[in-house]
Length: 258
Image 1: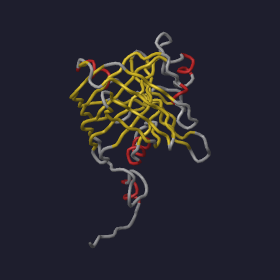
Image 2: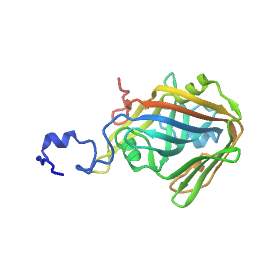
Image 3: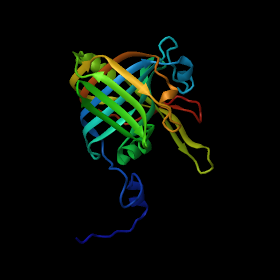
Image 4: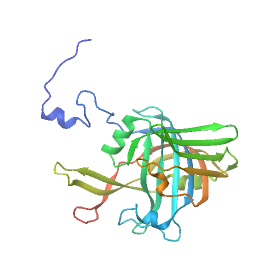
């Protein structure tokens, strides 16, 4: 097939979202998630451990030191196709707003990992998560390399969950750190950013008994937020879109964005 070659000039470079220039790591499109399936387990952990990882000006509730471990199986995603993701989020407050801080995420898709880190601020790294039904249990696992770092189990579709409660859980505002280092090793960009989910359709929602095991790993330290008590578990299937991230606090100037 013949192709027309044009000069890689300034205009073309500025139109490019990521490198390599002639084969970008991800497509410049808004992702629509179809059949995004969640296994979420909320648990209590040590308050001191939470305070050590949540960045100011976000605040954790000292009376409810909670963490959400979740595995998300993407049935179909615009530009990326199916993939699986697992990680931890932490309930927080920013001013008067309740939300969740994304602490760590592990994916089996390089394109989704690169786009999440570069375009937004998702704390994504490569891993091998999985979500599947095994006999009468829903099972979520996360491996880092060849090492198991998390195993979650939940009774499979034991009790229906109110769709509005499922919507509230999924659509909560989300906070992340956007850090871009400069060439001298100091931050060039260091911001707290906010995003949320839109166009949300809850297709299925269940709750039931659950268990969660976390295993220590130096490069995937989920167990640094140890499981003290299981609070709740949900299994939700959705369609949704992610809003673009917007800055809400600049650490380099210590100013809140307008």
